[in-house]
Image (tube, rainbow, N blue to C red):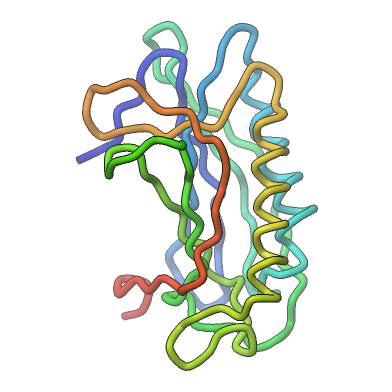
Length: 192
């Protein structure tokens, strides 16, 4: 079921490409906004926070191609994008792209309806993860610090706030933080 984008909200995405993979990767986040909202401010913050907080730990065969947003302004669905075309900086051995860092979108509310998550491929180094997929404690602290900074940067966009969009007609829920999970996530569709 597709995500419903109510008036005053948007769905933003980082678009990545990986050398040798014909399909792009997308990491998405909802955005709540109010007038005056400039979607380019949101996109610039997304590109800048990736460059500042995540680029150094992202594999050097992964490129942040662009950030994009689809948003509902006054009942009209609009789109904007901002190019980045910047490679990650980490040349170390990484896990395959179907083994991703899992980051929970926290809302502070209980129940499955109020939970969201992101999969971040291209980040996890082989030496950070043990044979059962658990990330070591030192790395967990560093990753959490990075995603706290990502949340802070996105939450600092003028007249915008991170939000969790729902596939039904219920109101979106504000995101209160990102929580890095200590067990890796796997996605079968990432490898063929």
